[in-house]
Image (cartoon, rainbow, N blue to C red; front, side, top):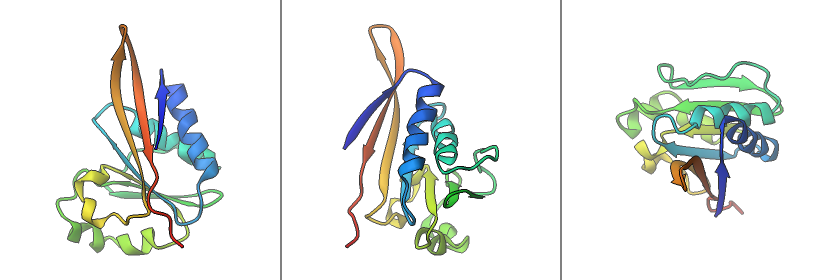
Length: 145
């Protein structure tokens, strides 16, 4: 487990960039945090780290946005998904078993659909001595053999 601190959007973006640069084919990142914690900023940084030049937007109404960089990047927002079946209707298995990098916002909505090898990233707003910052906790999943 890694715990990082971010004191602004630029630092959150750089953390995402670092994750994108290190991302491997087939890697899955599950992103959890309240509204306004910086999930989309982290996603933009990750896309940048993967060499994607397009503007990254939260795919709230389309569920998944696809981008091409060093590796394919699949950015999911499953906030509106009600159950696992809805996820499988959009081709979930093909995405998570492919060679791209999946970033899944609101992954805690359907934990049963998330494979054990997924890495979990939780972003929390924190306050210390009157200074607001983001606590970013990264838990690595079980690695495949």
